[in-house]
Image 1 (tube, rainbow, N blue to C red):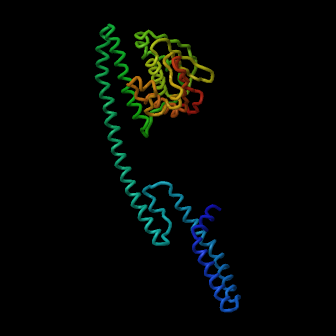
Image 2 (cartoon, rainbow, N blue to C red):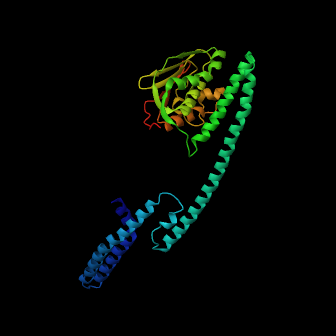
Image 3 (spheres, rainbow, N blue to C red):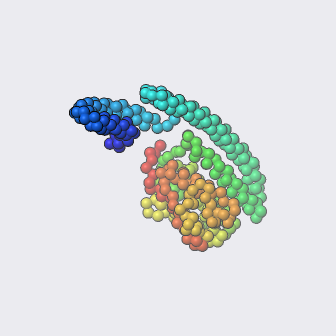
Length: 329
């Protein structure tokens, strides 16, 4: 019905002109005292003929409209699906669309090529930078001083940033390496906590860990990255106090800290790319990408992640693992 209304509106000038001609002829015959029936009869025939032709013409218009609507995007096959040209304007429009399609495809090809080059470069860079990092870690393992422990902690931070780059590249890749199956959640969490053991000791922060005793369907590597990022944030913004890891009903993994917290106005945006919030801006070193990656990964794994916080009292990050409706490999 909407299409028919548009069809009538598009042709209102022609309809109005036909009515105007009929009125002119009727008035002219009346002024010359000629029989009005001589005008009314052919007018009625023209209206009847028009009413017969209108549905046929509307059917052609509707068919063309449906074909054009089916072309949802500019692709290489678009020029082969055009409806038949009925007017000079149709031919001109098709020429314009073919030109736009060609430019679009050229732009997409060039952009894809540049993006692939960038991905390849950073992928190689990540793997190359891991070599000197591993070498430095081996050297530091031969010493056991406060300085070496501090350097080891800083080096671990560097490793995290490098892993963050690699994770960002993999997330935007068309291929994934997910291995979805049942895992012991305690094993995944303990492996992540173990990496931060040195920092807990150096900063004298208390870790409260309650055995989770549950199995979850997820990907070990990607979930580990999420947990490590959350722990990293908890340690970064907790000068004193503790970090608690526990499991709530329905497989909700909670990581709580007693840190500086997150401002109420910042909470809705902390999972957005590049958002640092008040704490991040005061820290001057926050990238605003860690929690964004966590959100992306959890979405891909069919998990959910949310944050609750009170300024100067702490933050709780909850990862809901109960919604994983994925097939086990």
